[in-house]
Length: 84
Image (cartoon, rainbow, N blue to C red; front, side, top):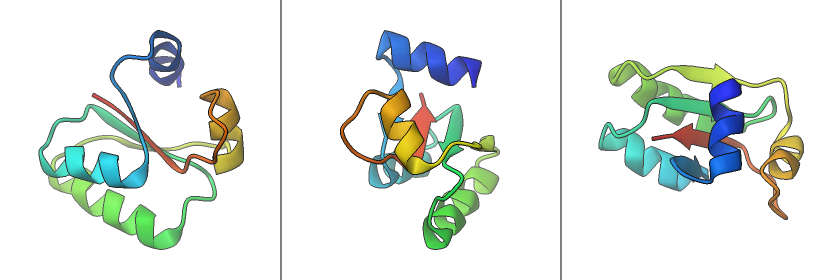
């Protein structure tokens, strides 16, 4: 979570959203992937598949997608975050 908080504060290297994260995952350009506690099951399965394929850590957070949106200071819910 420390890495995530630093990326949020700096605003660099943070990828928000399922589609953008999957795109970067497929190109093996990510260091870590974070998912909310209430991330949809199908999204979690897709993300999980690619993180295992490229040995990228998948971290399941205790925060809900609503809380992640607030933490990131965004006016929308966030289920998937990743770090480049």
